[in-house]
Image 1 (cartoon, rainbow, N blue to C red):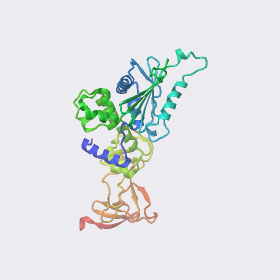
Image 2: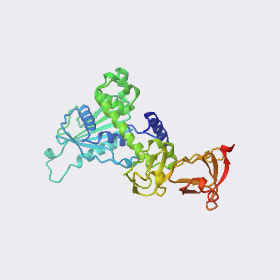
Image 3: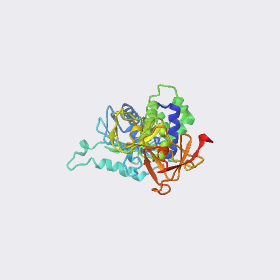
Image 4: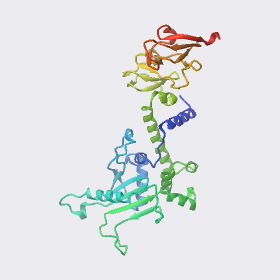
Length: 369
């Protein structure tokens, strides 16, 4: 079991490799946080934002497009809006954007209305109101407000009869102007939620006293999502990067199904599965070289005669590279197999000392020096 400090350090290494960590402005993360009406936290946030921003009451909420596949996080063509229907039948569409696209928002709102149309319908009875909530990391300098609301009105400002479309832009940067006017402790729950959308889980948010439900929910959401991303990344990075963050991988367990490519820790080493199988307690990784390879560090400065690659005391098999130097029990060996090209790799089930004259030659005995 690794300590939290070690785990956090390994996470930092991994973040540097994947070059990003996700916050609420990422629409994938946004949908993960709000897009599950069966999750109490998501339901609480949805109800908070819908009722607080639109000034409507909704006893129940049904999400119409809950599907979300983490593996598709970089797919720019995915539609990651949240489409909701309230208990009154009204539709609410919620989106997160980095900049304003007024034409696009209006066209999309109209399409949400037109989807309801069926030939022969009684429009007064069967067409429901559509609300759009658009969280946007932008602000109209000519219209400084947190909620910028639009509906169909005449020249006198009178709302059109049977108005069917309401659009509200939540101009998130404006929340920082509000913070200049009052303390974060004085924010309403919905203001705290918007502040976190805009700024993330900042130090001042963390310093807030307990009993801040929206803060606790959103902290849990972002932590859980980034753990999912980290877990997914651990399955996709190459062996060299995997070795650098090896403490993040699960320990090998008996009676467990493993697939080719799975990586697991065992006896302070990192291994990679070579063949699909179900593990058995009597056959640990160091005893079954046909099933597991040990992953060695990939450092351009490692493997020289001055900095040889250490050979683990216990291993099932190891990938060696021709031209690299290896250290076993104080003895330095050069991998010089005539069967291989310089830089070519091979997985072997024996240590260098057992393969002298075949794959290795003794270069130096450090214990004698």
